[in-house]
Image (cartoon, rainbow, N blue to C red; front, side, top):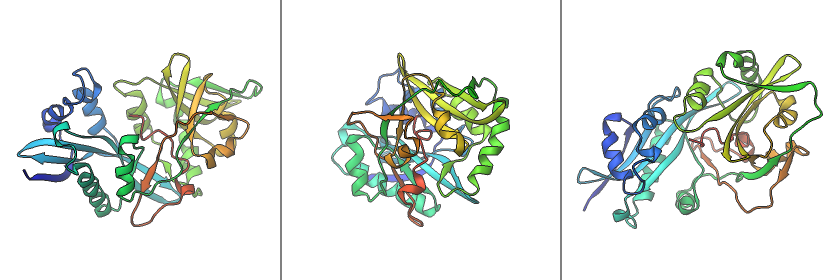
Length: 302
């Protein structure tokens, strides 16, 4: 048995091969076996087509890793980072070091493109990524957001038309120019693809205004009855603390502790052990924890 590892662009013509592998884990109704979801996630992304790393045995896919591109920005710099999702090895081929070999191939790919590799590995995959030398930063900790009732100037409106965001997008992009932290590039094409056209998730986009001036927008998703998850926060810095208070009751935000300190008085650290590991690895220019602390769940809640 000789298992080959390869990487290239994802092609919808390979959908049946991917389904044959994923069907060894997931039931037929799972979104990962849905053609429309696959087209949306791997092909329609305005930041570019997904890459894939595959393990092949005699023409059969026995391992898979998807790399979803996102554009990160700070000052006048732009960087493509690939978010790692949907990693699996066929049950019959586990224990043959395929996962580690796929990670090595992904590292080679991003290094050749001067790109970065990022992810939130689960408990089962964590040690493999640590052995591979990923640059792990502060884990994201759960916090409950305190709603604010006393700010009469600040209010929100649910966004149904992306035209509602145009007044604030230019302000947000101007704010990025002097910043020292990497942030997700905010474009109307990305917001449309990522949140309005998602095939399975329903997101709430709230435009935040102070008086009649748009100062940012918040993106959340209901994860359980009465409980929401903050997916990302795009706010002018001076309004960020009060802006979080506009989120729905019982909204949970995952943040590194160093960033949560900036929101003291607006967050309550939840007394649970749950945390989300986070790596962002750029081999040509390694990042510090502060460089990446403002990257939320936007690139991961697929």
